[in-house]
Amino acid sequence: MPESSKPKPTNESATRYEKLSPEGKKVVLHDLKEHLKLIDLREQEPVSLSQYAQTYASGLEERAGFLASSLVAFSGKQPASETVADSKTVFETHFEMELAGFESARDDIVTLVAPSVSEMANESLFNSAYQIVVAFLCLYSANVAHKSMRPENAEEFSYALDFSIATMSAGRFGFHPEPRNVFEAIQELRPNFVCQKMLNTESIGRGDVLGTILNQLKMSPDRQTRYAFVVGSKTVSLSCAAHFVQVVSEINDHIKRCAQEIGW
Image 1 (cartoon, rainbow, N blue to C red):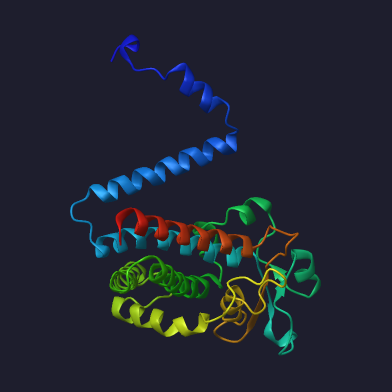
Image 2 (cartoon, rainbow, N blue to C red):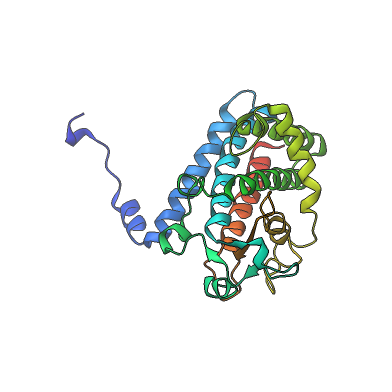
């Protein structure tokens, strides 16, 4: 198409966009992408909850990988023989964790800000972290669905999600190669996350859901290694807790928005 015949933005729209800060532009583009996804979903006739659950499961698997990577990146380890039964396993900073005798898994800012599966998957803690995070995110997604959808729709979505995740995760990161066994493993882990608080901002990792996750990871399966985690605080934001909040917030917003837009 010749340059002269290409449509050009109006001066008004261009001016409005340029007035936005770089962060503002990112927010606008993100919201636009999410809106287009919803339009796409609504235009599929019919849109079943099972289809939505399958699509949603792909995104959930990515979020699980990210959160598991964060837990590993913000972890520290030491031989179990050097610790006592009631030793502390959550710390505000890396400095405090290392002072307690734990060796940090990572301390470079780039990895801590944006941890990735490709970098963390070879760490000994990763498989356990991934399995526990997958089970928790499935449960959390189901809880959000029950608050956002009609009861029968929430049940259908939750079952389809667990089935889809089990199929995708089979044979990966320590999960059994048979999807049915993965499905059962996810169900068995669910009771471990029961807690009144999602995050205890006064003392992160204590008496909250994040703490229940970390408690399941504090000892290696062979009981030879003990792990600790940097969870931050109200004044220390660089931590696995920040990524935890990010992931659960994204899940909450996504399911509620889709349920409202599509009328589930």
